[in-house]
Image (cartoon, rainbow, N blue to C red; front, side, top):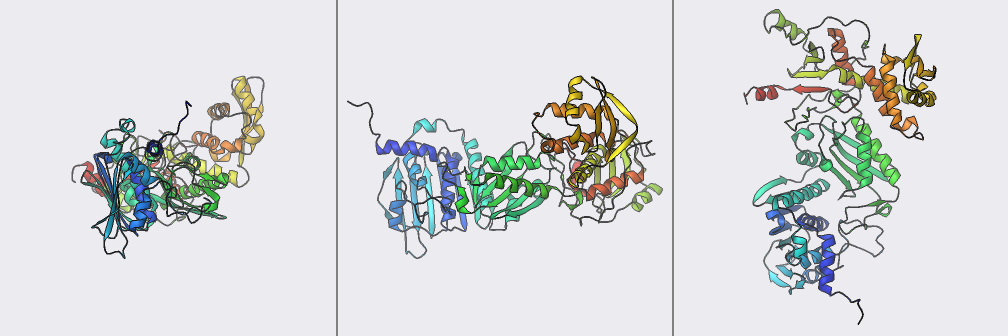
Length: 588
């Protein structure tokens, strides 16, 4: 006898079910997508024991007739495709696999009623065995109940996580779908407890509701288009990040996806303003002509193929970068993210852009007298009148400087009485970075010739790396030439760096070039190189600043793009409102 045999239909269905329904979250996703495709405006999801024991999805969509109910549980039966070319897919579902897969692995009951019908009908499937359609009671729409998931495939069931973890995955799936369809009201219950409930709302309100108050306070709009491609959505200020990319909602043609092209584009767009190991919070909505997109890559339908992936990547990077390129005065609010995972504190309100004067901030020479250490003025009599006199205009959200603490941090008072703290080195590093970057984009960085060329001793390998890129560095205002086997001569430095000691800068640049391939052109890593230069050309922690210098720094921050974080992604400013301070002192 032949060793090759055909598998039974029941076994084939159970194998196929494992590709589509890998855990309760996958079943929830498929059922909610069906509800959205049916035109539902209200969707309610309920899970018991993470969806393993029971999950239910109810909607007010178009419903199904008895004939459609009998077909919907058969494999590859679908109402979604208008033809069989698989070219212009405009619905979330189209493969006709979800309901048969669920029915092959669990106990499935569907009750559905079109609005014009006088009663509902029901059908049941248990481990692949289909029962006849019967009359039933039910409102217009569809209710799907899945019980005892994977009872028919025990090998799959034993690999499920504990109910709490499965519930978390299911909740994440519903939240992604809720972000993709803000015009639809959603309700999610976990073991009888409401996990979240969102009414029908606009996109901004839905993103703010599901991302949480700390992220909602600092949402920046993203919008751009290129040819037939269009992108919109929101990205959070770099001051609010997450340890994982779980809060990155990527939606293509109203379909939540986990696409590597888009994830990489977001990472590239944010790498200059977010610290290593942190991830941006984004909700991006990409519209692509259906014939420029292949969604038939995997049964789960979360993977895509773009016909022009490079154009999609470029559009996404550019749009997100432009959204992040705002001054601190343009951000709705700026919470400070505590790396330990503690609470985030809200910050200042929006202000018209471009009102802050561009004042020069000196980086060399002797420091001006200032309040050293933590010697805050006595809050009475003349000192109180002094602070009152410094009260800023509402046009200046970072307020008026009051003192310098530890010769490193500027204390300011905003117009609403809030307390503003600024890290002077981190803030000036960003200002220097943006000044050099702007000059570079304008054709080249202005150099300042040294009165006496400086000789810097370096290892021979470092000298060779810098010499090999001398022409590229000249465009950054840094003029170098070899000076023997172990030294390099510096003739000019970027003017924006002021009186900077060239030795540490050149050593860092040599290390930066060591991490690059020889074929890598400097322009590909320009921001990283500029960040190195900005760090060395900024005022240092420990330097005393005068009142005028502190004020100039705050005004420039308000008018400088990306000033909420330094070149390494760390926050430059935090703000404590009255409510925040009262909470810290136990008054709330």
